Length: 201
Image (cartoon, rainbow, N blue to C red):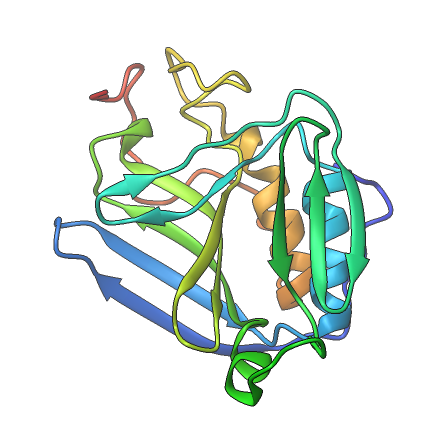
């Protein structure tokens, strides 16, 4: 984790617990996704920690789990971040977008809601996942960024027992963007004391 990561001017704007149809529970903590913060977050995710994250849309019926084999090149033009790996790339609108024929599109394309999440109760990856999720002004999910899980290796292989230190990035980012102090113990209070959690793939 980048030793220079420090808290930025940010506040929690909402906390929410969502009971999903599949029986899982997702806890969200949102912060204001200003252009400045989204640019900073893009650097923290795609430049400084590109080798630790999994990224892609995660909706009912489809999950894109993309890992980077090398550090991507980042560029920014007219509100759009481009994350470029050479043979493929993606765009993400994170700021004001002027070159648009519709005022409604111009207003709603950028990230309008950004939240850290922890999901519990699933049957994959140890039954929990940690990350960030971004939505546009229409309420459409733009992407999900899965952060390192204590139940999975960097190569996304199931670990024989949890490595709670993998949550350092999750809590470091929360400290920076939510002004929350990092806990001394990363292990969740309700995590079972088992050597091999039940995993289904």
